[in-house]
Length: 130
Image (cartoon, rainbow, N blue to C red; front, side, top):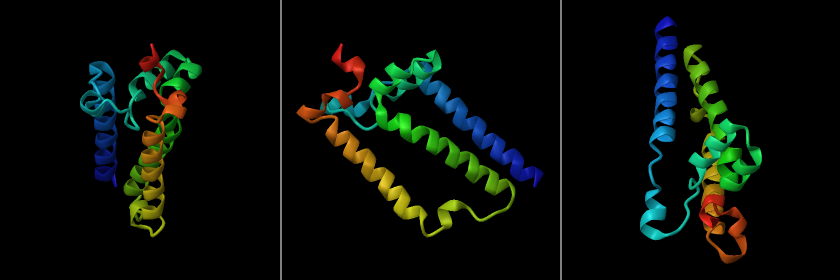
């Protein structure tokens, strides 16, 4: 169990380091750069930085989908790592996992399409309007 706990801690540390590197480096979105369309993740870096400043209103204007999705994804990762350490069956092996994952992916796709349509400019990142 100690070995599993060390592996889980290493995975969590690696994910945190990757997230920190993305925030510090601030890479451009390749989809926006080459197509001119906003993807479901456009504005997520600005959203996280706004949350770190404590500015929820600005975070809402950057990326509404990620503001809702990322906490759930973080909770899922922590629960999955906890189940791994305890030697329990992983959640992704359950029958309900695939439909839930497909629903989240479809919502992300719908969000990406809608934020590029003329009547839904309010879904586009607020930094793009400036």
